[in-house]
Image 1 (cartoon, protein in one colour):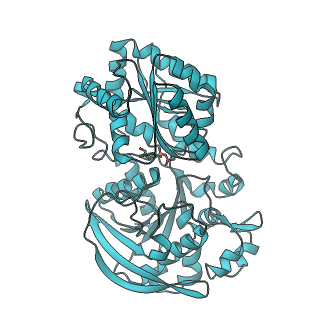
Image 2 (image 1 turned 180 degrees about the horizontal axis):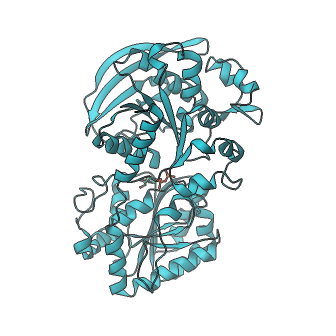
Image 3 (image 1 turned 90 degrees about the vertical axis):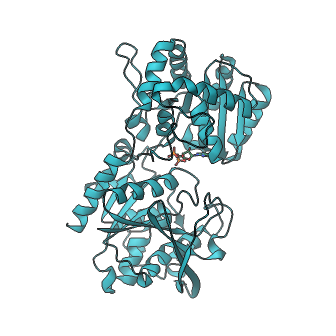
Amino acid sequence: MKVLFVSAEVVPFSKTGGLADVAYSLPRALIKEGVDVRVMTSRNFHNRKVDVEERHLLNTEVEVGWRKQYLGISMTEFNDIPFYFLDNEYYFKREGIYGHFDDAERYSYFCRAALEALIHLDFEPDLIHFNDWHTAMIPLLMKKHYGHIEKFSNIKTVFTIHNLRYQGVYDAQVLNELLNLDYSEFESGAVEFFGGINFMKSGITFADAVTTVSDTYAKEIKEPYFGEKLHDLIRDHEEKLHGIVNGIDFEIYNPEIDPKIVKNYTYKNSSRKQINKEHLQNIMGLKKSKRPLIAMVSRLADQKGLDLLEHIIEELLELDIQLVVLGSGEEKYENMFKHFSYHYENLSASIGFNEELAHEIYAGADMLLMPSLFEPCGLSQLISQRYGTVPIVRETGGLRDTVIHYNKYTQEGSGFSFGSYNAHELLFAVKRALELYDNKKEWRGLVKNIMQLDTSWKQSALKYKALYQDLIGV
Ligand code: ADP
């Protein structure tokens, strides 16, 4: 079974969030299950973490409206995963992966380039697995521009929604001027969205199967509150929608061997976390203290529940705790953390994207805060569990599926959670965690338990494999 996995970001070459982790670790897990997966991404290496040898394969051109744009294709192999890079410096040699004025053009090009590349490559996939809006025009483009070519005639498609909020909504002229399509699918309503076009809608409509990254999110997005104005469409396609929870790569996120942390440890000697905690306090300019250290590693976006935190942050900082924040994103939240860290010596905020520091935080903190408004899956809580850092989350999406509120009577659970999107419920959940922290024996028990949870990709990769097999009919 041959699968082309297409993603705008992928570890270790580019990353803004969880999509990049998944685009590396899911293909890797599938390869272990005997699937021939190759990953395709743009040659956008602005935060590339490794040096690999690339083989240049070929140059060709891609139609973008009336223009023909350069496409270079190179290849490398990293940790047994074959990667194809689509190169066009005009579109991709930039800081950042998204958020440019011409994203409609950049990702129209990317979708078309992925298919154009397939014409030339010595690889005949049975299935294309594409991810989020940046790739979501692939099935429609395939049908309209490549349907007559034998190599494409039997290719099945799977679309994974990692976050329904970001949809790629643009002027309808994009269809004609960038994607070389007529207006028939606009007029039929298949890609139309409030008078414009919507990449994500197109992906959902034309993919053979749609998945999203947790069971609960798969249910939530059928409702108006979470459906981002696409809930009716998602209901119309619910028979092809599957919720498959993300895992994490147990080699990258493993406190026993992680080279990015100062002291390695396992669930058997988790007290060594203390050394990582002291190191973290040190590098973040916090006082050495045995009191609970709460952390947040997050994109700073509304989705992440930062307005809730803002509401109670002073009450929180008046408690006998320390707070460490690593994040980047919306300026108002960056300023919020800068402001409060100026006023409170027990808050230290690092604004930016820093992979090494993220690992040091997961290893050194006692608790991780994730009060998200919505959370398709969430990886930070899974990573924190693996490092024995107890997550405190709101019960939504994947957070609901992966963090079970601690029951002090049975001593079962994998973190702390709260239901309503309410700042004092958040504070209350934190206080419950702080209470348990002072009961050393029970706290150690909880830390030990969460470190042993199996949140690896194995089970979920098998579900994807079964889905692929079902579609291809093998
Ligand atoms: P999302 O994809 O919505 O950003 P996830 O929890 O699924 O949220 O994934 C976030 C990933 O990005 C995790 O691997 C997390 O450690 C990482 N991350 C988030 N913000 C930062 C940051 N500022 N620096 C380093 N890593 C970060």
